Length: 117
Image 1 (cartoon, rainbow, N blue to C red):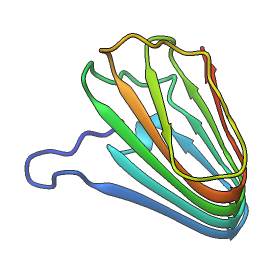
Image 2: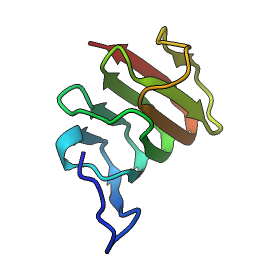
Image 3: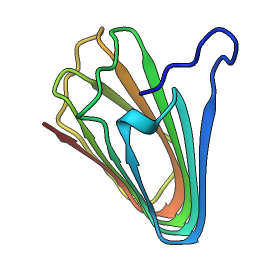
Image 4: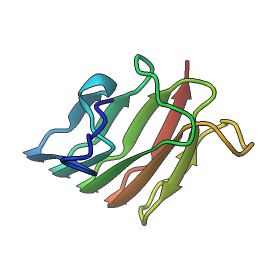
């Protein structure tokens, strides 16, 4: 994860495609990422980065068809918000504290699946 410095606070990465999803790696992401596609999901792997405690990494997914597949460490809290037809699969930690990844998933079809490494 690339942290914004004081000169450029809250930098947002934007990924756009008509057909086809996005594969996102943690080392190339900033604190906020928006991924948009007509048809296609987002495959996000955050296992190779160290997210500091108390930090919130925010990913927004906009699509008609396509969900989110998120891979994180065991100590990372995941919050899922948005409106979509599809469920959320996550058996992660429920205790407060630690780093947080917030997924805002907006779309017609597609759920959010969280895998812990």
